[in-house]
Amino acid sequence: MSRRRMIYEGKAKILYEGPEPGTLIQYFKDDATAFNAEKKAVLDGKGVLNNRISEFLMTRLSAVGIPNHFIKRLNMREQLIKKVEIIPLEVIVRNVAAGTMSKRLGIPEGETLPRAIVEFCYKKDELGDPLVSEEHIAAFGWASQQEMDDIVSLALRINDFMSGLFSAVGIRLIDFKLEFGRHFEGEMVRTILADEISPDSCRLWDYETNEKLDKDRFRRDLGGVTEAYAEVARRLGIIKESAQGGDVIDFTSGMK
Ligand code: TYD
Image 1: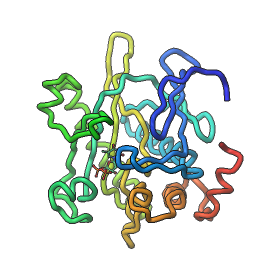
Image 2: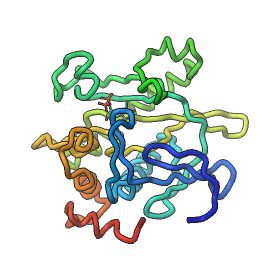
Image 3: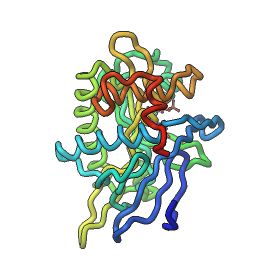
């Protein structure tokens, strides 16, 4: 590992200083956490798969005009990204009730919502990322009204695009979490998509069987976590068609 400077270490990723000003390197770890890091594990190969899946989705989103921080993948675990100032919000888009929405509102998991719903959580681990309203965000200055409007419109466009992309490969996009940042371009500041999009931050169910192909396999002790992530990568055409769960080991070996 080089002597480059670490900027930040999160639960599943590390950020290093990039080769040029305004860039960072995002490293994907195998660490998995849930329930505000009360539950932890190391899942062999997860980082490699999330790096590839996030690269794929960010590249596709760029191609349809969704501005995001991805520049290029550097190796099996790292990608070069644009440095942004992260807006302290977790932006959740939901198509189908699941997780905390089902618990909070008593809507059975799996029930299709009348329309896509965008929620904001305040990004603060110590508080367990509480759900907040636009009123809170404006009053406490976490984001401006213009930024919130941009975020909602980008989040809904991302949802439309990703719902189509996943449905074409037999996967139902239940919900997902996004993070946005302020990208400083000379005198201009632009709101762009940041962080990652992967089975760590989405709920993905098989259309036919409702089998979970996401981090709920870890949260709910269902087993086969990396195998499910590999299945997502295989269906998206990121890893070879014949690759099955067991092949994840081959796929990731020597690529730490
Ligand atoms: P949600 O149902 O609110 O929470 P939980 O995952 O604890 O049941 O999550 C909605 C979606 O957003 C789900 O796909 C997981 C994702 N998410 C994250 O990736 N990180 C987060 O901090 C939160 C709150 C959600």
